[in-house]
Amino acid sequence: MSLLERVAIGTVLTALALLVILGREAAMIAVLVGGGILLLTWYAVRRPLASLTAAARAIADGNAPIYPESRIAEIDGLVQALRQMARRLAERLGELDRARAGSAAIIDAMDEGVIATDARGRVTTVNRAARDLLEYAEHETLPELRTLFRVKAAREAVDEVLGGSDIDDRELVLDDRIIALHARPLAGGGAVVVLHDLTEVRRLEAVRRDFIANVSHELKTPLTSISGYAETLLAGDLDEGTRQRFLGTIISNSRRMQQLTDDLLDLSRIESGRWVPRPARIALTDAAGEAWRLFADAAEGRKVKFSIDVAAGAEHLTADPDALRQILTNLFDNAMRYVPDGGRITVTGRPAGAMVEIAVTDDGVGIPAEHLPRIFERFYRVDPSRSREAGGTGLGLSIVRHMVESHGGEVGAESTPRIGTTIRFTLPGSDADLQ
Ligand code: ADP
Image 1 (cartoon, rainbow, N blue to C red):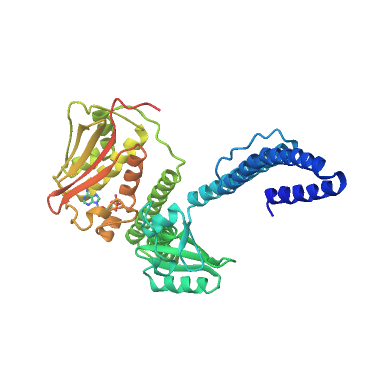
Image 2: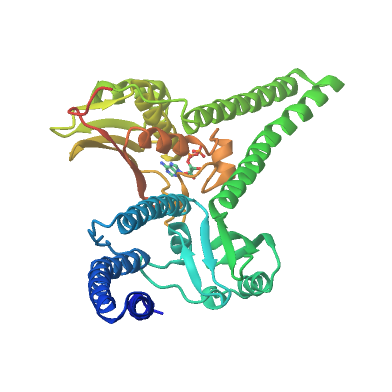
């Protein structure tokens, strides 16, 4: 029953009562006055009540409410209560929004890919890492979870989790990536899938395995030789010439092991980040001449010619002097190993933007094209037995690459078999900061 109906019924009942008590005329006057007062009261209450209803609806719809001004204490009390309720609601919603934005930011910043779905498998949440892994652009819509993966093993895992089973650490190969998949069914239906990219971890594990195998192999050969010759020497009864020969072999093998451990220590120092270059201004011609001194006698004996040719603008560079000496020594060492007697080794320098490009060229045996991209890898050798015989460790160019890169430079190689080889590298020029 509306307020108006209540007022009308009240008025009629009052009129009847007054008619019985006061008589007809007095009752008429009382009814008219009373009815007028009731009608005025009704008009005063009806508008603010309607506004109050509209304000409550606006709050429910999330819009800004307009509150009535009634000057009626009861209605004003109601308005105050509504205002307070709207304020609390806004605060709560704000808190919820902030919490939701915080969770979304955390999920998006995760290294693991996260995908959440509803009960039908439709994707409701997907973070940046999952998009990257599955190669979906930022605003691209993902298909349903069941059709998201092209790989059968992944689709089976999805069926299992949407069927209510947990999945832990299932390793999958998606294209060229190795992924660990974890998934949990959600209480209200749907699932959360977490993808962990293991590609780099597996690659590093393989690198470590190869490295250990290589080091063991490199150490085993000279060690076997040393212990074999030492045992024969111990057994005695050898003529002096043979004894001297055996001792010579033992010494050269221990030197090889020494060289290998020195190179390994250098490499681990650079790779661990414990070594940082201490740049100084260096005159290229002087540095190359000094590094060559180690080889000058051997070169003279083999009639190997050496020259330095530095272009204008490349006279000076900014690099760690010890590192530059080691880079040049490793490159000269290789060049000397592979040039024939009477060959030629040249150092050239030329400016390359803010850097100086230095090249060591020889006219030696050269490197076949298929090996060229790999010669800067640890232990990579074109001809392993020749390199070992010549005292190489397979680590020289790897050390060069690391040292150059830690100066912000780059290495490269060009070679033609039987014509010769050029190893190039860049280092900061004379204008670089001395830090
Ligand atoms: P190594 O100690 O065996 O010289 P490096 O890392 O210095 O190891 O070089 C890797 C391989 O690259 C060598 O084994 C060799 O096969 C090839 N190489 C490097 N420099 C030259 C060069 N100047 N001429 C021909 N081959 C080279």
